[in-house]
Image 1 (cartoon, rainbow, N blue to C red):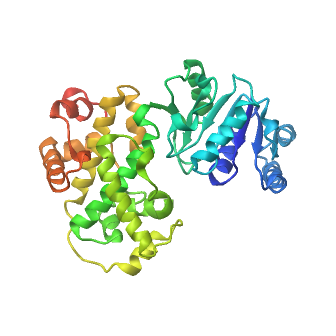
Image 2 (image 1 turned 90 degrees about the vertical axis):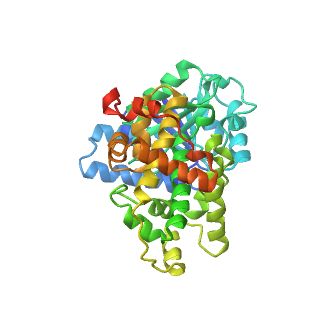
Image 3 (image 1 turned 60 degrees about the vertical axis):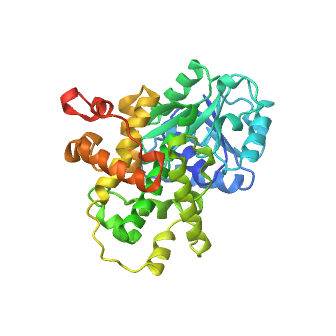
Length: 380
């Protein structure tokens, strides 16, 4: 199989590295307008190290070094079976790329975008044979996360979906098929979680560092504000217009406004700057934060129930992906049992009354029990 990668920035490079490592017999063409020679040399250097360390046999090395090319010529992609676009998040740039590809590649070539925030239908508007077009979203960091979203269009064919699912499984990931307003859902729920944390920080009158410290049991690997720090305020504060689930729009808009306020106050937009900025502009409060875990898990469980009800399939994969994305320590059923429906619902209702945000509107107990209660056979 011939696989093309367009864009060789952070995401494009990581996607290529993963596929190149995991797929032993496929061939690759990388479209890179500015560093073809330099990046070819870097891949060859990595292959040489793998050979010296006995990670590759001599035969594997000889095949690998001839199985890829880095070029600035779009026509070199003409024989590809699959092309993954991973350039920066600008709609006009992505549309121009796919418009150009449409005239170069076979009508059977899968055209896939790694967009993490833009409208999938708009990205592929004007492209012929839309049955082969959809989003293939790798969550960052590419090597460590276990899921890849297939953000499909109404026109996407079952055959093309199956081909992409096989590709994802061949590289050791789990495919998550999503459509409509649930496109890019893992980013949507992460953005909701960050916006919710911003609200709770204000509700409890604590610093970002204090909030993360108090919720270490819930988020043992990395706190929510540490996630914001690693993503960067500039990216996380981007317009939520591409996130189209209506119930979450007020909460996302609130978080976006607050993050833009921090940017206006001088917080750098780059990664690993947010927590340092906040440490310089916040003083430890010493305020109790006892109810924060309940409030935080209430939003996560509520959004999970809503998504499970709306999507209606891939239940176990979806819940596993949500837990992986937000980083909670236990399965949702653990927290449902720990706090109980009445307590969780009361927390959601209090937040809904104070903010008016529809993200805190909850479904009935019987729906929650279906997914989370041991008494009704809930598996999650």
